[in-house]
Image 1 (tube, rainbow, N blue to C red):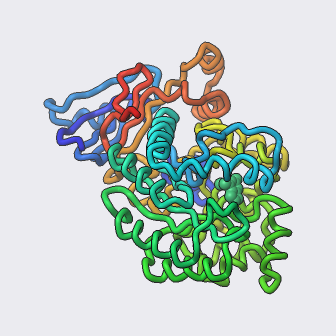
Image 2 (cartoon, helix red, strand yellow; image 1 turned 135 degrees about the vertical axis):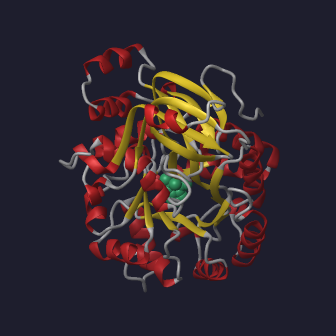
Length: 443
Ligand code: GUN
Ligand code: ZN
């Protein structure tokens, strides 16, 4: 925690609203020469350098960045930490990919020493990509969640995670029961939810791997703990959807399975939602549920093209997710680049300011954390990144031709990745520095 006030001088850009609600011009604040002041882990002032300097006590140290851009830390609304070791596994679509690659790797998390090593590597990877908050799948093993939260707590991160619930259609070595899943989730909620910056998500993997009895326990947990999250997958792949309708013939749609058990509320986050009907979109909207849009995963597994304009039409909250290890990058910048291409394939444009919103404040809204994180407004928690617009030779050359802020932002999102992230600050403290004086915990 930062006891002292500290100021950062740089170009500063952050999202303040959804462009669809206020128009592009009013959706962001940009200070070409700005100062942001941080104290006790929170942002206490921000503005044009001249204005902030006039009110800043002389004793406050100012760190100045040249050719850099400070923005809010990125928010990943769907990712699997146990899949770090099998990212980039060849050749399959969802159901075979799960069976051939995912389940065998997730078995290894029975061993808490392995789980701790991967959790640490995973959190280092998030930091070096500028991601400061994520909604994270564990495995079915409760220890996988304990070690994840322990590592996140050491780093003072705002993280949401949960133990996977799976009581059928998965290898025996990876299943729990409705009773054990319920009891273990309950104990994890009691131990971790609202401990420091940590939050818990009840995490049924997806409808096919839970019985009615297990889904009913999820509804029960959400009633008992109304402020915990619900995190699962929805309508990702056509074969998956057919299978769900076979397994639950009495339900009207894939979403209706979750709805029937009381799993839709304003802290429910569904990954993918690629093939949803109008009725399903309306129901997501009515219940305040959110969708995690995961472009690199949707392309990698050949799942389909996410329809963002349709979600906007139905006023469904959307955040960005990498979905590692089906996703192929931890970088939210790379994820935005792929999101742009998915929109292109549907004759739609994704404006860079909309991308900035989705990667930061939009993600915070989807996670109902926009009163705490998502931008650099006074009072918010000081999770921010310092980006290098000249990170590579190509970027430096290309940036020279970019005249407007929008153009620069688009180049940043198209060409940027972890090389672009110079520093990542967590709750006012430097957690990562590309220069090598890395404060992150080692394995
Ligand atoms: N559906 C059920 N489990 C998974 C998973 O681990 N990854 C993805 N992308 N989809 C899923
Ligand atoms: Zn996933």
